[in-house]
Image 1 (cartoon, rainbow, N blue to C red):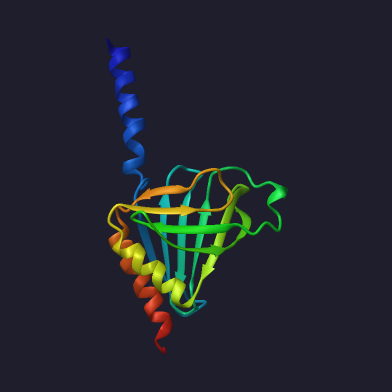
Image 2: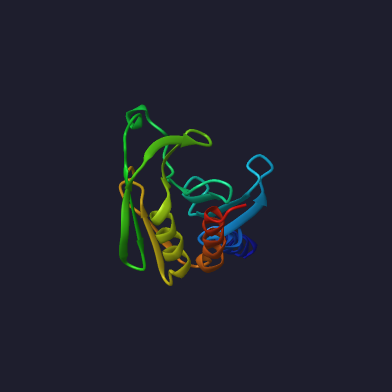
Length: 170
């Protein structure tokens, strides 16, 4: 009896841990950057300990960086590969953009793109207004990141504000 109760408790803990640990929803971190003089905003959605999406913005610099980490190890064959990243919100393709590949953390493959000007504005506005799904095809994995929009309203407001501050004189 004790063994089955312990096993049930362990299964419950493991299946609910991702939701409690900040996985499977958008979250935001903001802090003053003493080097740029602006506010650094980091929005992320971690699907596992090794995979997720990061949106990075600095109010003192132009544009924002979108980085996708599919969760597999970086391989030399990705050197000089230019992936085409695709962005869709609530089932509608917004645009595609050519990116770069690299590695992050413990040699995990990543693709990223720097969005500037109108593309950055379109991205953050669509992100903030997404109701159901945010989908990003990173151009290097065999399937896209299909993410819930849960948490994207508050996270989106932070990156909208960051991009708006970039256009205003300090």
